[in-house]
Structure formats: structure tokens, C-alpha cells
Image 1 (cartoon, rainbow, N blue to C red):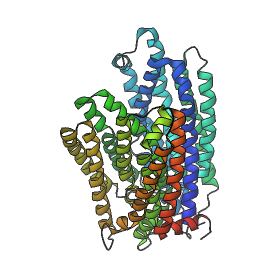
Image 2 (cartoon, rainbow, N blue to C red; image 1 turned 135 degrees about the vertical axis):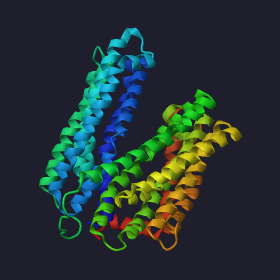
Image 3 (cartoon, helix red, strand yellow; image 1 turned 90 degrees about the vertical axis):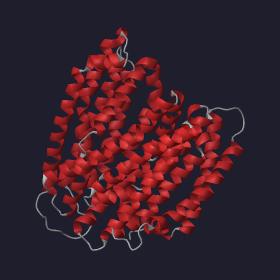
Image 4 (cartoon, rainbow, N blue to C red; image 1 turned 120 degrees about the vertical axis):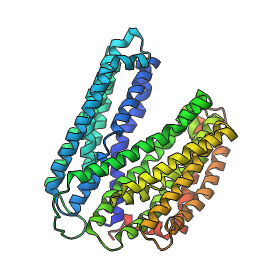
Length: 509
């Protein structure tokens, strides 16, 4: 199997696994909102924010597990995988228990902070307790999933996630009939993570027992991977996640403090849409990392630069398609989702999609430094980007109001991405620093301009009749079809590297 087919297959399976759960939540959210009511639904949403933050603060061991399991597999040292994953899970469980215990001790203060009324305060307290301690199941869930990705067994990952999604659907339907639905919905989430953790753990055991090297010839093990390496790498990854999380939310703080809450709402809508859309290329990076680590472990001369070049063109083509689609079709997309599209919401979505696309375009760069065990380079670029972001957004607000905050975000994304690319290509000793990315970016940029203009024109032309979801869906469908066809034609005509990768998807080269 070619490397391109392997990465493409792994990406498809990751999408099946991750989006199976996401689709259940999208389908069940209206029913949950109706059953809980606005107040309890808002409290449940805040629980998700808290737990999402706790899940993000995993000491960076999720990506670290994937990276070092992949290295162990490349060296044919599969006996090292089990102890490595077990030690990582033990450390994460200890950390999560400490955080959960602190949250439980502060439960009354948290309920006061969220202004939970006395009428359903006992139920809220139970839901908070279940959330804090029940979501310990996230730890093995993340660790087993990361290990399977490191072994490039995304088939087993998808096989564990899909039944978990069905378990979530069934448990949520039962929870909606409960006399204490808030607690029951949280319990349904815990049940899903527990089921998926069990299935992913069984899948990991099966993968180790029946492991097939797949890539390259035999390599002698170089001894077990020191756990200290895992912790050091994870520490840098956690730092990068903290910087990225700050970068993600700093504009909402600026808008809330300097402008008004309606602008924060428009920003939040745009962030949700662009975040879900950019999940696809990010999953592609999860599929790419084990391949890069494998080549890094083999220490082939010039392998880093060759892998970097091979991955750039198809990855940037995918990011370019998603970005131009969000920017050009922002109006009908929001109308199809919300039933309306206000100018402020459209502007926010376009700005956030553009900034998110620019940042996501550096994904191959960040994956390369992670594979080479140099995550400090990513941290350096992240700090530079955060400082630029705060400064330029502040200047933008002073010059242009709330729109200037988003303009500052876009400008800082361009500057930070440029710095990151130049920094890494210099480290890779490319013959012309910056030229590798620029060359791979030409075709997607031209295609985005041409296809985006066509999609925007067709969607506006078909956007007739009274405003509403139906009008939005019709315009979005015609615009997306036009954009997709035009973009594919231009990219395939102008980018030989993308054509080569497409041929590799259907051949055994």
C-alpha cells in the first residue's frame, strides 16, 4: 500500500470515528434543549466547557503517546507499547483525580458562580459530581485512541468509536425520559466514554497481538523509550495547547470587555462553524504523524524534507477548499443552520474562517517538528503569534471597532504562519527558505479565488424567496456544488503533486 493510500485510508477512518459521535450530538441537541429547558441546558453547556478544558489539560500525553508508540512500532519494539501507555494513563489519572477532587470541594462556589437556583440545585450538584469523577473515563479513552493512531490501526479506532456513538444515542434517549434529565444526560456521556474506552482498549490489545509492520524492512530495537522523553515532549505539547487555547478565546474577552455581548455571540457562532470544518484537515495530521515518525525513526537521509514536500500540496489543497467554502458561502451556510444570517455574523464567520484556514495551513509544519521531537519550535511560533494577536486585535479595535478585532486576528495569523514556516524550513535546510510552502500554495490560492467567486455568485443567484432554512439550504447546495467542481478542476490542472497523490489513492504504488 502506498503512503498516500495509507494516510487517506487512516483519515477516512478517523472521520468515521470522530464524526459518528459528533453527528449524534448534533441530532440530539434540539431534544436535549427542549427537555432540559434554557437554564439547565445552559448549565450543562458550562459543564461541557469545564470538562473540555480538563480534557485539553492532559499533560500533552495524548499526542506524546501517538508519537512514541509510532516510534516503537517503526523499531519493531511492540512489547514497549503496553507499559508506555499504562504509565501515561496512571499519571493522567492521578492528575485528573486531583483536579476533580478540587472541583468537588469547590462545588458550592461553582454553583453560586453559575447562579443555579435552589429549585434544581441538588440535581445540578449531582450532575457536577458525575461530570467531575465520571469523566475520568476520558483518560483511557484518549490514551487507547492515541496508541491505535500511533500503530496506524484507525480501523480499530473507528470500530471502537461507532458502537460508542450508538451507546450515546441509546443512553441519551433513555436519559430524556428520566425524572432528573440533567444528571441522566451527563451519565449518558460517561457511559459513552466508558464503552468506547473498553472497545478501544480491546482493539489496542488485538493490534499489539496481531501487529503487522506494514512499512519498511526489519529494524533492530534500540531499547525501551525512556518515560522522561514522553513527559518532556508532553510538557511542550501541553504548553502549545495552552497557548492555542488562549489564542482561541482572547478575542472573545476583548469583545466582551471593550465592545458588547452581541459581538461575542457573533464571534462564537463563527468560531463553532470554522472549528468543526477545520477538524477534517486536523484529523489528516493525526493520520500523517505516524508516517512521519516512522521515517524519522528509520533515519533516512533527506527523509524529513522529502516527506514535508510530499505532504504539503494535498494538505494545502484540502485546507484551501474548506477555507474558500466557508468564506464565500458564509451567508447561506448560516441561514441554513440558524434560519437567518445577520451581516455581523457573516463578517465574523468569514474572518474566523480565513484566520483559521491560515493557521491550519501550518499543520504539516507543526506535525514535522512533533515527529522530529522538536515541539519547542512550535511553542516559539505560538508565543510570537499570541503576542501579535493581542497587539493587532487591540489596534484593530481602536481603528475599526469590533470588526477591527477580527481583522487583527487575520493579520496576526498571516504574520505568525509566515514566521513558523520560515523558521521550520530554515531548520529543515531547504534550499530556498519559504519557497517550499509558497510553491505548494499557488494552485490552492488561485483555485480558491476562482471557485470562491463562482460559488458566491451562484449561491446569491439561487438565494431567492423568503428568508429561512430552506432558502439557505438551496443556495448552499448550489454554491457548494459549483465551488467544489471549479476548485477541483483548477487544482488538478495547476498542481501536479496533487494529481500524483490522487493517482496514488487508487493504485498500489
